[in-house]
Structures are given as C-alpha cells and as structure tokens.
Length: 214
Image (cartoon, rainbow, N blue to C red):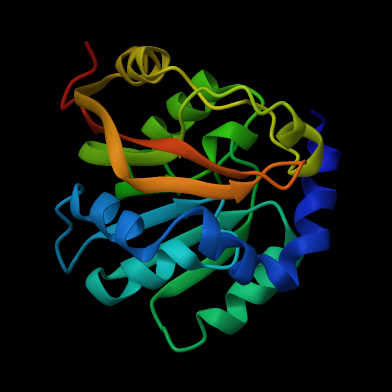
C-alpha cells in the first residue's frame, strides 16, 4: 500500500475518526497500555500516529510534556481541537521513519495502531529506539496477524497485523530489553465487507532501551 493512499484515507476520515475509532479500541485498552510504562510526572513522551489525539488525552494529565506526531494535516487539525485544554502538548507533522526529535530525548514512546501503517516495521522500531533515553520505554498496541485482506483497500493498512514473535524480534534487534508481547485489554471490533461483525485480537508490546547497546 502506498503512503499516498494512507494519507488520502486519513484525510477523508479525519472529521469522523473519533466516532470510527470508538469501535476499534477503547479507553480501557489505552489506559492499560499507558500504565505499562510506569510514567512519572516529569516524563517527556511521544505518541506516534497520534491521529486525533486519543492516546494523548490519556497521557497529558500524567506527564510533563507530550509530542504528538502524525503525517496527516487533517488528523492533526482535529487533534488540535481535541487537545486545546492541555498546555503540555506539541503536535508535529512528521514521518514515522524520520522522527524530528534528538537522540535519547524521550522517557517513553507510544503508538496505537501505528505499526501496521509503516513501510518497514523493524526500521520504525529502530528509529523509535533512537529517540529513547537509556531506560526509556516503548509501548505499541496493534493487531495480531489476521486474514482480512479487504482492510488494505478500505483502511489503507499496509500490514495485516503481525506475528508476536516478529514484533519481539524487532524489539530485541533494536536494542530493547525486558521485552514482553502480550494480549491487550480488548479487541478491535469492526464490520467486515459483507456486514459481518469482526473482533480482531490486539497485542501490546513493551520494551525498555538498554543502558548500553548489546
């Protein structure tokens, strides 16, 4: 799937995304993923593929600063409205494979349904690891491998989810330790092309940047 197609999809759905998103993943799943990072009030964190700011709404009350990064100007425009109540949020237009942040600058990075839109998931995880400080945490929630090929066209998905062993291997190759890939709190509930109800399982992947790269 071409990047242009992904951008077009999110440009088209930006104003409706909060309603669409509500069926895919819940506040409970978001908050459980955030809890895994054990954030402190002085933490500086980032949310990749921030969309309309759903994850940041769970992060901002608990940390010092949040960067929200997304390629879609339309999604970021909605995020700015949704996040106007927070004074510790900075939204940036950026590609996931070239983050506009210094090496070792973040205490944690989050990405909800971000990885399956990236051209190269292993490279994306390596780039995220670059901006983590030693001891910083990466928490990704995304779809387990599935066979719903229609999602490539309907939702501009590059990948039909992931095998958990692959995600674990990408974390380790990037220099992350204490890696855990487990079931997230809940499923992605959607409707198939024939109107059938679908519940796709979601994983949460956690890792901590080594104090010294192996």
